[in-house]
Amino acid sequence: MSDLKKEAESLDKASSALRRVTHHTAKPLHSFREASHDLSAFGALGSLMSATDDIRDGMHKLAKLTHALEEEWHAEAKVMRDVSHAFDLLDGLIAAAARDGKG
Image (cartoon, rainbow, N blue to C red; front, side, top):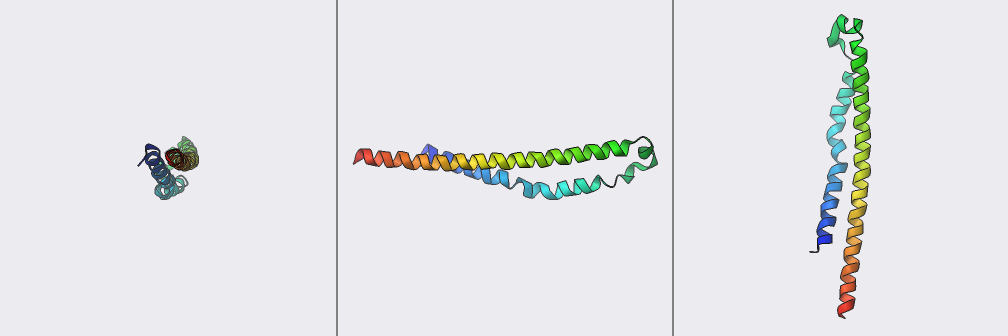
């Protein structure tokens, strides 16, 4: 097996794994977002000090950042898959050129 073929397979596996990340983060992220709406554990003191608003805002920002990171992972996975396919094509072209050169 050529080095390009091995690299293509490795990139394809990594791409698939990266795309599946959101399957593991969806439920915890949803729970985290829901928890940001119920910060009653801070009680009256938290309300008086506006701590709950600051914490809620921070939680919303973290959720948005996580979503943006997931989108970036998907984009990176697409590039990895495209490179994998390009390596496969190049490997095929090199093999065909080698066969043609021998014949």
